[in-house]
Length: 270
Image (cartoon, rainbow, N blue to C red):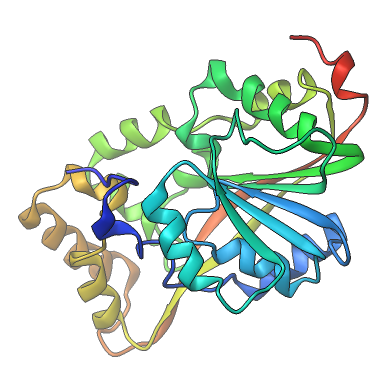
């Protein structure tokens, strides 16, 4: 069964990690967040709201449509006085016009239909101050469907179960679609780059295997039976060559778009 973002039992699903240092360095270079006001749209458990606070933003508002996720984020971000949280959607944040200098949309747009991307980006444009920056981070089909290797364990998922490959490609936007929607919503893409981000470090492959078998929500893995998931875990070990006691980092490749507002929100075509 797929994860429900509104389920009270899942409010901690996205609070168990910290932002990867390589992500922190890239955002520092792209957005120069020190002292800026920011919005984290689709903030989930607050991991990246907290990361923005650690990068020195003066304030950040985390927006999510799920009350359960916001409850988890409130606990995760309790130590950060510059973070506030509010319920809203990516196309209707409830924030005032021209109210922030930086908008982050990480792992958000694959939940949005292609025809709705302009609505989401126009909303980001509306809440940004003139010259503000939008950072869009998501995984394109080209990122997700790289071959399986020691560096990209998820590739084995799609090689072993091709039906997952079709589902994954169908729920992701390619880079050209994202760029077109950004440019049609009042943004200029300043930079497009890829980042290999550490999802989690493991003391051993056996720890990863155990976690994979009970991964909360399972993401796309909810399509697999328990037996198939166990076969997958064993197949990854065989394909990657990892020994059961060998430590490693699970990494995913992401595409990040750094886009700057190029005109007033009033002049963006609707």
